[in-house]
View 1 (tube, rainbow over the protein chains, first blue to last red):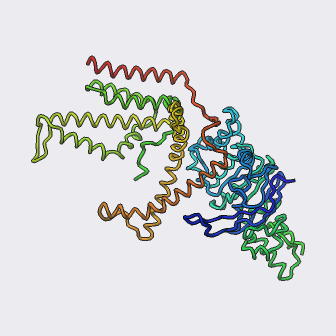
View 2: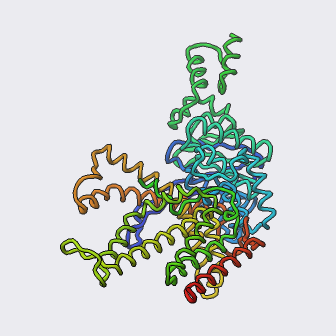
View 3: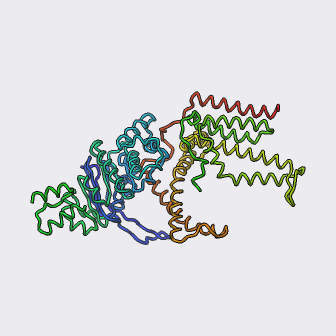
Length: 282
Length: 266
């Protein structure tokens, strides 16, 4: 039994007109079944409007399913009594770094979560220091968040979640608004947390390069999970990915094209090194 | 131009004033401002000026930086002074045509000007030496007793600190939208007052839309971090009075006593 499980999870955005009559129903998630093990690094891929963010918001019960159930650590996310337990141990990092930093000083922002949980003062300080160290932002502790780069702001946001001692972090397109350097910074941090602190990571993204760090990938399209597997398995199906309007990493695409034109290169090449090795073996 | 406003900004330093409890600074500022209006003679003003000078020296904030803050309200200041100068009845000092300046007018203009300058300097010293968060924490603690009559003290202070956090962000955004609209041919600079006000609409509408979107995001992020109002919340930096705060209160009491004594005996 995994830490996150869903069974026939369905969610509909219902639009109503002024009299409360249903105007339109938009099914964002359609009978999704997922099972994530503790300590996994899961990437959820999909182009815009595929329902991946909506799915992420179910994990810490910001949204509750219209049909079906979502379990986090065997707690039903629709159960209001468990709401705060779920939110404490399933932290969430959002897309826009500016809109999730609450305080005007980095360390105070990291302390915001533990403050809400009612952690005693000395403990808050210890947690803040630990989490700032974990994301490598210790030297910025007294800075104003406004003066940090996008990548640094996202790391502060991650530290803010880590200070609540979650078992799972859900990152909803954390790199969408960052430059390439900021993206690398954030992904490296997340990977480290997954390896060192054994936090389960759910990374929602549409950048394929980021998926390579994961050990499990879900591909979503029109509210359904359409592909599931390791990055290697997913990227060996270049044709299918293209059908779901996703771009494969350049190396993978090159390898795919080379293979198609007759070279015997294995499927699912993810890094330049792998491709070089494969070509050298020819 | 907006960036020139230094009033309400924090000036990082490690002076004794920076380390004081925000409650002391809040109470001190309020007392200082209130007692400015009780001063009845010039000795009182000298006393207030000396006190302010001392505080400014203690704060280690450069005087130039403080005075820059005054520049932003120069117009208001001149307006108040001019109003007092020209519209106070009394013995005529001199006149040009219909403008009549009286001795009483000159006196009250000087006093009003001084009072305003002291008031602005006094309150900006508080904001220079106190981070917005400390300030709202201080307010929350000071207004604590109001909770008994159902005033949402924690919520008010949370709103204030969020507003302070978003001022620079929204300012940047205004700048961005302004440039974007100017690139599309919007004209913010010419025309009369009404035309200019109208030209702000294409600036304000996107600004409001984005502010609402930000508010929505922020609310979600706060909920995701288990925010559920003030109840059961602990503080990372709880406010505690130390010896120096008591000393500061003592100095404040002495200042107030000084003003009263000057009014009475000089």
